[in-house]
Length: 400
Image (tube, rainbow, N blue to C red; front, side, top):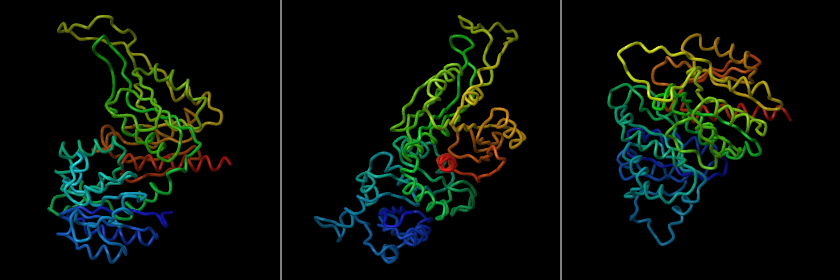
């Protein structure tokens, strides 16, 4: 799948740098042509000679080193590569890349590189969860950079938490998906909904839920990267629409229903990721409800069932739903799949800590109409999106 592809492997200065050697072995075994670029501190953990010996190519380590010349052929080859993979990526290297700083070989090449980028962070769990680091990661994701979330376990500093570099085999799979799957959904029209809905109580208050929209946006972004024509219908979020995706925004469930009805007939696949509120106030007050020190009783009525309405009118379309459950997750999802005539449903346990709403990772179970149940390990939402898109691709191929 990646045979003959040119891949730049960026290595930054962390204890996990030794795992980059195993990743390099895997890439070379798949017959990729690999160019290694090292940050200023990476050489304190592993020597350039190791990477040179395994890759068969010179290592770019110093901006003003002995190998610098007018032509720098190995650097030019790296800049024209099919993919840049940074593994491990430390907090410092992520900060440089996110903020356009270039003071070593890796950060210089990142700024010059024009192709797709995969980043696998590795650091202390406290550093990874630091708001500054998370802000840098979010900023890079908005620019189209893909991340392979670190894993949980014992860290070099002796603590236990999320910060371990993803296993090289997992990074290899991400590389294969990103390169080999770039255009495998060409010609497919995919409609995605994302985010929460908001149902107003009065001019200043509304009923909503904590959905961030990250899962739906990941599906839309990955589908577009893989060649699909994507339309995204988004509830209120702070996320920027993925590049190349036609985006429509709305707030209330009724507005989302109208947009889905408008675009559903022309799509091949509907992926209903949005966390649509189940209830709305029976009456919306024209003036702000005043606090008078007494109990406020609200009468709530059901919101439109967008997924059911779409399924009623589907012809050739594949319809996929999401089920956020707090108990009897698989059973509840199976009932929803049958009740709403879905082709596939993605279920997750919202009571589990650290996953689901607001987070960048999740742990889900895929259930199809034939009754097949596929429980996935904890993955980034980007990785879950690609697994889901693989199922969509297989379904479309079976129609032929």
